Length: 86
Image (cartoon, rainbow, N blue to C red):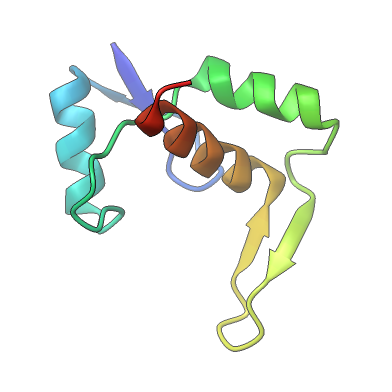
């Protein structure tokens, strides 16, 4: 079973990789490049290796006020590393 996360919400259970990929496109989280959902295990390992509190704010966008937490960054890094083949 594949899981993906929505913000800092609990993982969303989806039937398979195809469903997870379709969900990311439906949410507008894809720009046409290949989409591979991050795994919970990889995200947790990245957070452990970084030593950062998952809720720590790493960056803020000055215009929108949106913030990037360590957890969000770990999710994005897992996606990118998986997409190019770790």
